[in-house]
Image (tube, rainbow, N blue to C red; front, side, top):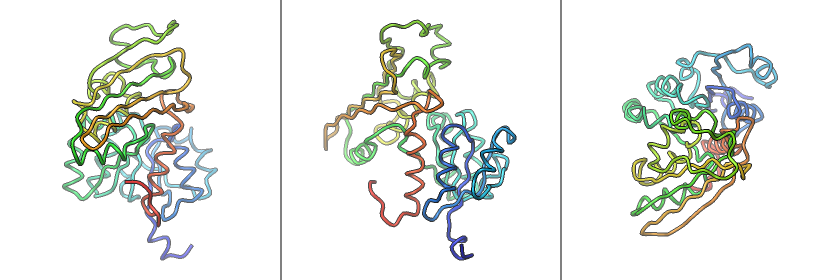
Length: 274
């Protein structure tokens, strides 16, 4: 690689090497046009040393607040409780932050203003949903309503704050149970690891307070099922997706692929979709 090519590449850092972060790191290491993996941040470096050593070009291992020094794009692939610690120092340095735990952004929305003030960006991948392009386009006009129904296998919902706080027993369910109905904002508080898709949908459309959401625990499904219905002045459309869970049952396999697709767009010669 020539020095000129290296200097023109966008450097990417990843915070968290769980089921999403490892796939994104591997894709960057295998090669994405115009991008390179420069650094990672992990809670326990020893746990991930074998994976890092197996990469063709080992990235630096840095604390969360130093990722922005070593990268142009910082990808958040960590629990939502770590979102601010990852995004704030990155956007303060004028970097781009790719946010996977989008539900956590609602409680830290001042980060958008911070990014604006410092020339940074916050980018939300489509994640486990489809049709955000259509919602974005419809929002240029007038969207009247957005409704979303999420059905998940039992294992994907265990430990959700809403379930714990309300002492709901889902372990022995034999038929679907509606756990929640309300706004996307409230859903994000009750199911922070489960409804990032609803928050992304709401930010693309009519906001987290007007986007309506149902969450079901469903022992009859083996995939994370999302159905969305949109009424707008430009179109009426519905969409449904059934995502295969990853090693982490709370996250679909397609989420990591969505981050990789977004990164590919950053320097792609041909870019398809808005």
